[in-house]
Amino acid sequence: MADDCLYAGKWIPVTAFLIGRFTTRQLTLFALGSFTLGTLLSALSVNFSMLLISRLIQAIGVGIIIPLMQVVMFTIVKKAQHGTVMGIIGLTTGFAPLIGPTIAGFIINKLSWRFLFWLVLPIGIGLIIATIVGMQNVGNPNPEAKLDIRSVSYSTLGFGLLLYGTGSLTQNKQLGLIAIIAGLIFIVVFIFRQLKLPKPMLDFRVFKNRQFSLSLILVVLSFITLIGPQAVIPTLIQSAMHHTALTSAFVLLPGALASGLTSLIAGKLYDRVGGKILGLIGSLTVALSMFPSYFSRCTLPSL
Image 1 (cartoon, rainbow, N blue to C red):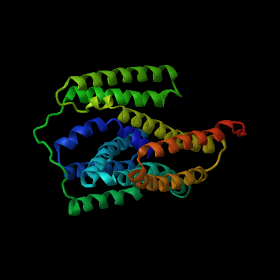
Image 2: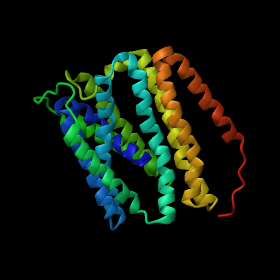
Image 3: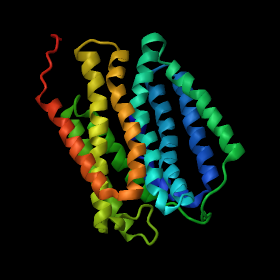
Image 4: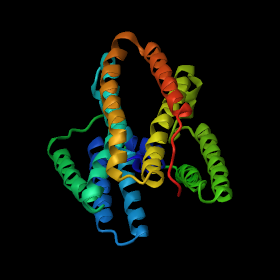
């Protein structure tokens, strides 16, 4: 799930245009269709290249459905209940990447890795059927809106190279740094182009709002603390300590349960007390949780 989110990040800038161009029903069907197709191809993969391409197809669907979900929910729900809505969104986007390794660990330990995709495939098909039968359109799309190809190219190259570079640092530090620098350059070019366009694909002028910028920084840092241990801990347990995937999954399970429960409670509290107090409590909790990890000493077997 974490990989899906990382790959999907490259498509989210394009999704901002797609939400304004097509109906929510059309986009949802396309996103679910892309995810389901990628799932099927992943299950049928015969080599790594095919699996990688299949996962990218999945990521297209994820990159569309995540921001679309937020737009739809904020459109149909009253402002006084936005905190509750964000709590539900936090439950799905935060809880799923953590509970996923637990289920995946059990499946890999007992069955083939292909069952990870075969089990998800019926869910994707069911969601497509449910969308066709019951989903209604939300908002007023503009069919005449045009996509700026240069913006798409800059964003895809920028975020793609940044993702590739960060993933390559452990294997080839020089290549990874070059990719990261090139990706950042493309992202900067993308941002400047958006500031010049009368109707940008992404409006970066919102960063002039201090509260928005500060909140976004806190969200990014929170996700770093979420995704970072999620990637490191299973590697430590399986590669260094030589335990099974199921064991590493159960180590992550308590955090997944706590994250899901906290998201729902915090969402409801936000509607009552606002975000400042919750932000302080959350930041302090994250900071305190880092101290035991920093001072802990773990004896690893010889590799």
